[in-house]
Image 1 (cartoon, rainbow, N blue to C red):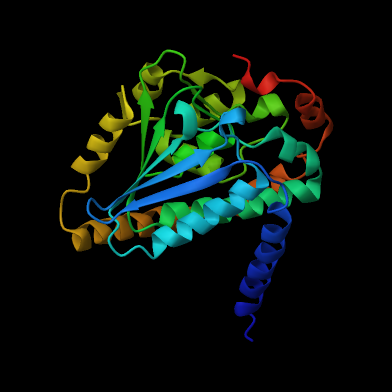
Image 2 (image 1 turned 135 degrees about the vertical axis):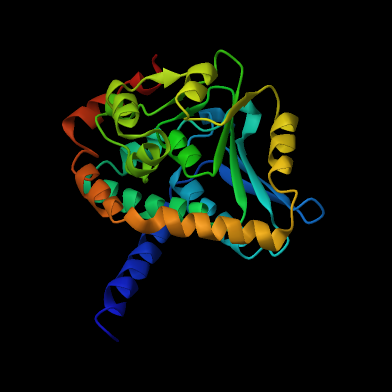
Length: 279
């Protein structure tokens, strides 16, 4: 084994153990529906009793679902949404409490950076449809990993990087992705204020691509962007991904800085309250 392959081998071995551990933290599911005729897949976060918060089990399932999409030869687009008209409220707080240590935080950041990296690398067009209570914390990071973001016009729907309320920072790749999408100052402002934005303001700063009224409109929006030849479409996505990946080394720094905060005093205090969802 060469020196170059040793770190890579160690990384995948680490993922194996993280995957096995996280699978034990039950709750919810990640569901996938493939339509070979339209080339559109529907990926659903299904944990409605917790506004589709992501449990450890769901993190592992999300990776598995993405791997199925990687192999889907007829795929052109994926619409990502949440059950019961809510997108995703971020990490499951029960899971957070059970993994509340620096080591647990590093494992989660490592695994979710890997998973969302695979989501970004998919050869198909990915669209997040944010509705209901919206996309908070890790839910906002998942939305950033998609090629496009659509948001409901419902005044109750919001998107927010509320991590600092929880005594942590984005660590699923969110810092890098957010800054790439809206720029340094706007990204830092959103993170440090933990503001929850409605559709109009989110669209104004380029955080979302459009505001719509229904799931069917989201499907139509996606169809408009996958109407051309599948080979050309996938080639366009491949080139876009190669350009995007030039500065990905920052993700190692992100998880190293995040790990000591996970399970720290501020984080544990926040976990004992419901501060995450307060405006």
